[in-house]
Image 1 (cartoon, rainbow, N blue to C red):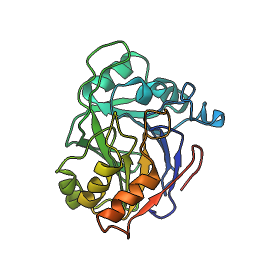
Image 2 (tube, helix red, strand yellow; image 1 turned 30 degrees about the horizontal axis):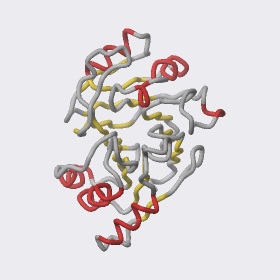
Image 3 (tube, rainbow, N blue to C red; image 1 turned 120 degrees about the vertical axis):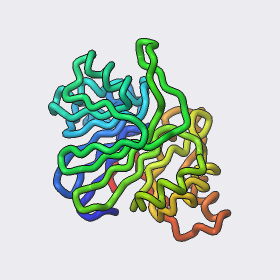
Length: 232
């Protein structure tokens, strides 16, 4: 783990990151209607909100969270514009390959392969992921909803993340088989599984990811398994 950093899983693809400098980052806020989110987190606030794409299970509470903490809200350009129209505080619209600095963090937007549409049916731009560089220079890669792609190797080469948060549930994202290959491409030794366990249709699990990593000879990779509400 990056020094003095806490990562809490709030179920599905919602992550709360407390950085070494005490900055609260919330990724893809889906809280009160998320069947796996602990009730104690329904009113969570943040300094920085990161949105990977426009689907409701990733964006439902982004505006509410941003208002509670007057957060900087970062998203792909079209989504940030829409969030601003809904009342999100301090929206920053950017695009793939760009980097912004906020609250002592560097946030870089990376590509992802998925779909995106806004809750009102509007155009949701492109799905993306993030590399978050903490105050101490260590980096966390948040893949967002995606399948595996070869340029994950380039993300690993450029940013050398300490830890990767990868979707593993299958059906709507990559499952354990592809996630194991994503881990190999990225070169990371620590992985957190995301977008799994919410519904019966999401069949991928950390146990299956460990098995796939073992099949690739990557027994030195640690898959950290959290229950909703637990922290690493």
